Length: 206
Image: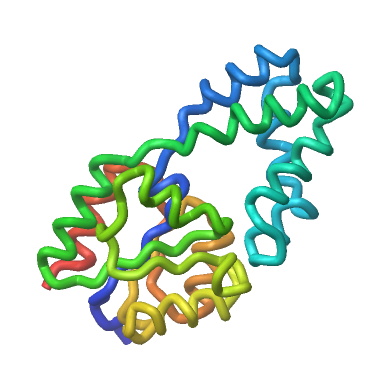
């Protein structure tokens, strides 16, 4: 049986609507004599990351935990904190083609939500990037208390969109999130770049 056509859109933030220039982290690592890629490696260590993505610790506490883990490599806690804080000052850039697409879809009456595993800094990031008011809903894992790809996360996102899962199209750049969305009953598309927008427009066509 054919699926119902999607009437709402749910977008991932990092890797879809927001992009990060890897040269920024690389520059900080060179400046502080760190191994290439170590900032991301430590920051994404699940024991440090999972608590902040579910709201059990704050973004500031997470930054401190990353600096603590980096202290030996950086030559002491002060240098580690300075390196992490310098890295964290860069909050990424909006993908303009995706933002244009969001505006286009909302102009057609399609509700658009942001679905992101994020910290309590998300609202500040949205303001910094000029995205306040650009989305109908924002579903932040640290507010929901559970992260993608859990079924409960997607249930909360669909409730926020006021749309049944079978009428929601979810877009993300991670396979695990795509699989989780499909298990929860959403349509899902694995994002590979702005070239995908043509397909998404067709999928959401009236």
